[in-house]
Amino acid sequence: MAGETLPRGRFYLMLSAFICAVLGITSYTLWLLRSDALTSNFQLSSLMARSFENALTQSLNATSQAASHALSGVRGKAGLREVEADFAQILRGAPHLRSLSLINSQDRIVASSNPANVAQQVDTSGYQPLIQGPQTVLRLGAPWLGRDFAAGRAAEVGVGAGAATDGVSTLIPATLPVQGGGGRRLLVALNPDYFVNQMAQQLDGSLGMVEVLRLDGTRLMTTNPKLPIGQTAYGKAMVLRFQEREFGQFESEPEPGQTTLTAYRVSSQYPFVVVTHLYREVALAHWVTQVSTVLGLLVPVLVVLAFLALGLHRRQWLLQLQRAESERLQRINAAFVFTHIREGILITQADGSIIDVNDAFVRISGYSRAEVLGKNPRFLSSGRQDKAFYEAMWSELQASGYWRGEIWNRRKDGEVFAELLTISAVPDSQGKVQQFVAVFNNITAIKAYQDELEHSARYDPLTNLPNRVFLADRMRSAMTQAQRHQMLLGVVFIDLDGFKAINDHHGHEAGDQMLITLAERMRLTLRESDTLARNGGDEFVALLADLTAPADAIPTLERLLETAAQPMDWRGQSLAVTASIGISFFPQPGKRTRDELLHEADMAMYQAKMAGKNRYHLSPGPVVLSCSEPVL
Image (tube, rainbow, N blue to C red; front, side):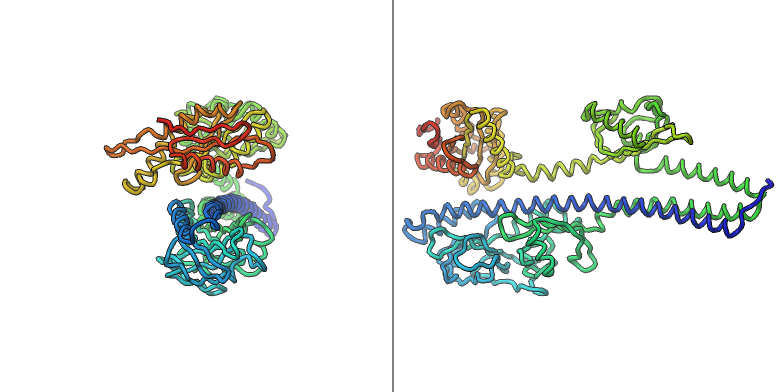
């Protein structure tokens, strides 16, 4: 026990430096974990903003196309009452609209789906974007309080203005140009409740909120009823940022004391921006738990070590005793961390054979400790990663002594799970690797949530068929393949006959079940290389690939007609509809776009309806073919 103790000043200096170093490293590690949590939630917020913006843009596109079609022949109609009838027909399949109106150059409504709106004066001078001369693009106005223009009023606009929407019906006015309309424009009353409900279904109010703003910062709608609409939500600097950059992310405080991880996405076609807020407190909840766990272990250890060091320095003879006690405490703490930490830990020798695992590994993998000792971790492989993946991982581990990434493994019961894995090499004093330590988290739930968001953005929630967004991608690919292989692509537009009667007489639940049933039947009628998508309402679009001639599509069209006409049993009643089908072909002479092909197929479907329904019509293409005989 004889020995010379360090000078008191030097001892205290070394002890203080050690504690500061440990606290500094711990603080830096926790800061990195916090940054990772913020980054991942910013990415999630951006993904949601993009999804919501895309859905809103698609709805406005659909409204513009439907209204343009209704007004395309306005000069030749008997009067404005026919226009109102067309508007009312469009509104039946458009829950995102409150009304459609036609206004003259003096901003007075001359025709409307809601007769009470006629003769109402609606000031559009402040609509965004501000224009000089004839209107050529969609313009958005400030929100109104009320279900429609006849019984509503414009909300106050500006900083500190606005009105709370909790329990109050609102609408968002927008104007669209009418080609050849002589100064007339289309006035659309958008239904914010429809969009807010869709957003709230994807983002729970306890996790965050969504806002839709005009490009001048005016709040049009929000999932948070406490925030007033019509209010200028952000300052001039943020409005300029919206106008300069299509997307971005930042931290904000939309409500006093509530900091959020905010991402925005500006519509590429219309003057609005979608702003998604994820509450930072919720996003960092897991990180706060980690901090509490780490500090709960670290602080007691540091305190114990400090008191031990002081005791060792006071008496030389107590040095060995205190050192032994310190080593014992360190072993206890290490064993406690290894056993109770939430992350799975696996330790192998240099040759890869497992020498120890912790309780979290047993819980996640399903294998007991005795079953894995001595084995190589490759028995956990799920087969999703190929040989090249593992060769690259091993090469990086040997080169740097560290590897981190996502990997899919298989539990004992056969279930495949995703994990975030970190592998570190443990060398001896000469630098030779003695062991490998692998630490992993089960991130299957996070991956599943990401897949769910991706699926909801590309598939129709009712029929689980591709939606308009996914259909556009499929059409682009199919048109490219048709040109490359010198084959024909058939674009089939399907509209159900008599579907409205089922909704009216048997309720929307029966109508929804009819759509689900017919979607599945028609999908099974097509080939695996073909595509069936829901275009909205009771309309479907099918892509028939690899046709050598237009006549090749006729057997498929006949099967679709037969399938659509098959009855469905609904609570003891037999319900049935028929279908009117139009088809266009690609390629054709001259440039053809996806919208042109869909429009041509839509016109061919209209010809089938005019000919008596329950039939198909082939639009003129490379070869002119048509059929007007009904399928019995």
